[in-house]
Amino acid sequence: MEEKISQDFINDPFVQLRQDLGINKMDDQNDPVAMVLRHKDVRKCAHNYKTFKSGAVPGRIVVPSEVDIRDTRQIPFEVDPPEHGAYRSLLEDWFRRPLKEDYEQKLKGLIDKEIEKAIQSDQIEVVSELALHIQSRALTLLLNLPLQEAETWISWGTHVFRSEETKLDASKANILYNYIDSQIQLSKDKPGSDIYSVLLKTEYNGRLLTDEEIRGIMILTFAGGRDTVINMITNTVAYFAKNKAALNFIKSHPETIGKAVEELVRYFSPLTHMGRVVTEDTIVCEHAVKSNSRISLCWASANRDETVFENPNEVILDRKINPHVAFGFSHHKCLGAPHARQVLKLLLHSLIQKVESISINSHEDNLETWGAVQRRVGYHKLLVTISSLK
Image (cartoon, rainbow, N blue to C red; front, top):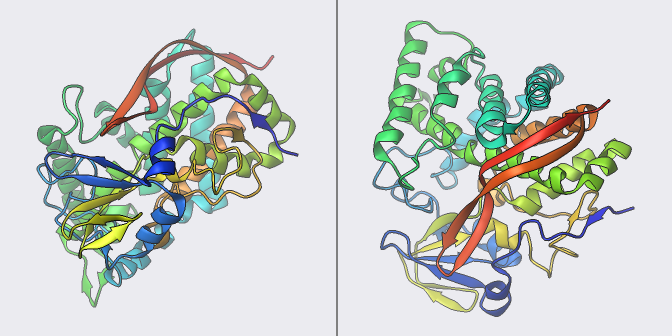
């Protein structure tokens, strides 16, 4: 049994370049990037950390580059093996907590409450009033902080490094940095069971983590799981609004929710790509790349690769073979993936238990431009009406 929704809901702008060249060349603040587009090449490059490194100048592997707005290294994101594995081992147990039953029940309660509020409204703007609220309140569980702390994060808006006027906003980024520094100090003054307090007691290579290392971990936690989760929630709501048959399918087959989560993540690929810095002259997809230039691993293109995925532009909610790379691949797989998966899984449970239908009243697309390619990653605004099950 496979449920196909034959609608090109978010198209694949990389298809021709992927088939013809395997790369897409773009410029990023006078620092060019060769986007790697094919599934096998993305995985191969992701695994080869010696040639394509993450441990470059802080901010450079992100596209757009953040070198002008931060000099703190995000950990373990901007660290290569073997140090990457050592840092990661300190954090993995904490970030696996979303898989525990008590955590899941608390998260379900938060998401159910947000969906119920949305149903009671005549209409709701999904990005700022639903997705941002779910993301921020769910993050209080991940960080083991009081629920009211989410109100501060909600006040920042959907981006921690961007404002309405610019892709990168140093003054807005400083709000996050100052906030993290103040939280570290609060936990020093009054230790608790929150993530800051735990990190302050954590040893790395026989010494306690430094404030700078903790700052790097927390910047990654706030920045890495914000836009992506918001895009995922917003796209999912829009998808079920446009495809009521898909919502009905999951209602009839709730046992497919696990597969549906993986398929929606593959299809939407809420993070388009992530960069690496080249350490030596080499060849990628039969194209020469120079030492100290940049490539990026294009998850969005790899997840639509027709040589890997049958009917890649269809959402197949119970897709049986799904080697997507939406959470990264190899050493740098997303540390927050268990949390993100739980948010989406419990959102689907809430929708099938409480929602009859979703209607889109208006929307404003969120378009990204990467060289000659423009990709719709989600929405800036999505105004909907959500109707309750009778």
